[in-house]
Length: 332
Length: 180
Picture 1 (cartoon, one colour):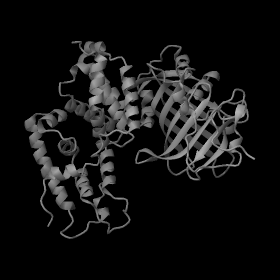
Picture 2 (spheres, rainbow over the protein chains, first blue to last red):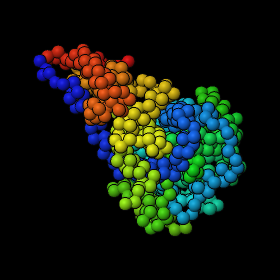
Picture 3 (cartoon, rainbow over the protein chains, first blue to last red):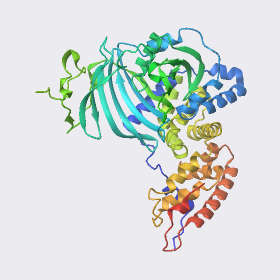
Picture 4 (cartoon, each protein chain N blue to C red):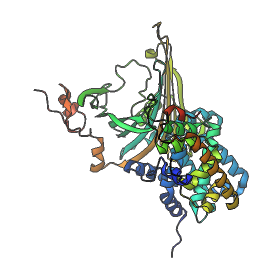
């Protein structure tokens, strides 16, 4: 016979989060970033006092609309505050991600749905990049709705005038560092975007191509945000398809809060006449770090003890190099 | 003495209670949803800082509870907690019908079968560790009303536990704990 115990004691012992109040270093950073964003938000106390309870209730309704994953956030944007703000928003958003005196640090959760895969995939990434083109990104699997094991790590840089740029990529599966390229590839003369790279570079590219328009405001994670929308635009690589991009940028700091990228590709392949890609990224942290020697180290590929090097990984040096000391030996 | 500024008051509130509010959200919402619930809760606190009482934690829990309820309604996530608890209640070895199910899984499965109000009442006391008086403030009711709610919720939890308990010396099949 099971001994009788008080239900509340049994329930307390079944708490799935008994250590839940301990924050990891990364969670502390996320908390700091959230606090900084909150303090940058006008408290709007005067508005609340003037509006009384009715305004509070309206705020509550708006709050209800913004809670949820980024996909839900993006889905409701058209229902909230359709007032189109004035000009200069795009320029300010681009300027916010283009400062030369900082390193941008981004933590994001991305959910990708691809029509020819059975399940949507969620990945986490943490990246550091500069407006002059250095980028270092770690990609993690998602596990139980949070960041899981490290899948890959890459670092490199964009070199002015080149469409394929050098980077070194470490892959967990093989524990190998190999040479790779980053960039839009051969110039097709058409607009394209790589939704997996630096969001700042994406915004700059969209502005250069005059593709962005302001489509009102919404709220993301409690922050007022501008909707910057591009598309639909056609692209030769997409056949008769098209792509759309939507950035949600913070209305106070102009830093990105979320992004949605979707493309439709129509092809002559009878098995896959239409392919759809839908990626929703939520930027959990988007912060500027001072560009000093200590922070510059974030731009280097992480050390991966015991990693093998591919045959040509050591070639990326000097002017054509990756922008940090290459850990692989030069080829014989 | 210098009065703390509004920013300093909020920063103190945030640093003192961020982790506990986060834990509250994580116990009730999917992991991908919890950060937004926490952000929304503290944004309400930031905007209504002058309304935050001297004992802010029950007030913050109350705000988080409403944010969660609204989120569930608006995003059709009403079953999120049930799914989460059910998923926690069903061990990875679901395919093995003879697998032993632990005490914690049984208790969480019993909890998942209760109404949302009963769950919240019990969780505020057992998981958030609040006294009845503070839990009543978090739940938005009087102490007397909360005491009645707690008494009834305990009874209903006991009933569910009894239905899930393995017989003496017996084993529970994992499948029996699925909650629809």
